[in-house]
Image: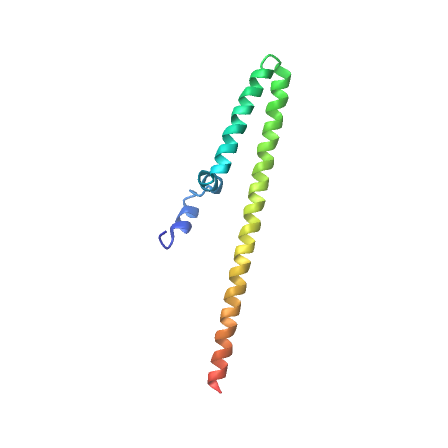
Length: 106
């Protein structure tokens, strides 16, 4: 990865973490395919009842919204953990440098 590849992707709005994660996880891909097939089969079963189709579509829409919220919150939490770890590490590193610098001044 080049030095500023992530920064450039953020700037150009080319980051889509869900696609990046999902494309690399075979369990996810298999389960997603299975769910998609089962949804299609279920739609066939209810195809003669327009109120059931409408209700099913509304439930799916709510689930998509919920999934988006959950994904964002997981990302935000992981980001906060990562930046916290970096902050602690850099703080410890700089404290050692300052302590050593003061030790050598004496």
